Length: 144
Image (cartoon, rainbow, N blue to C red; front, side, top):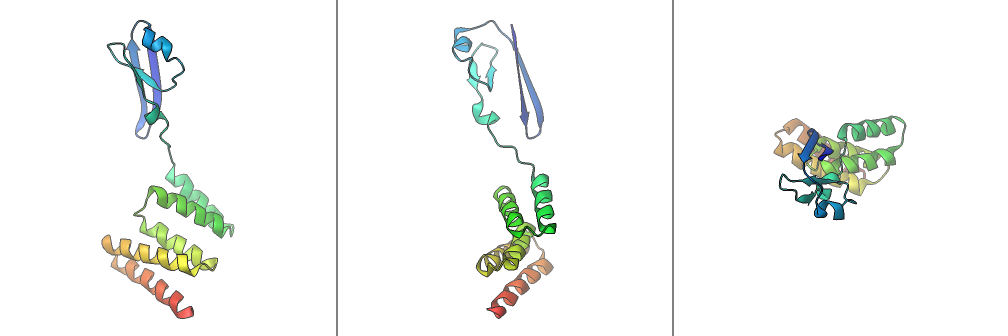
């Protein structure tokens, strides 16, 4: 009997197929959705792989941009927060979220994000962008 298991992984679709006879191990674990059966007939639980969350970062960026254009600044902040969860070294995302925090009057979080973006821009050799982030911090602090 052939068993075929397909899964979507980040680099594409993986298809596994095995030609085995029904085993007691398999029969006892038919409730598994994500599994593989080795050539020796051993059932291997792959649930930890199948349940890995796939996140489309371009969709998050697009949604953030749409919310920004529609004046939903808090929604855009939430989108940038989600983006930063998956890309913690994204200096541009910190900078943009800093601008959004500043726009909604949350100067404390704005400064924190501008500091993070400045540090990352500096580490990435983006000296001009580092200076712009530092200027934002100075501007906020001069208004307080």
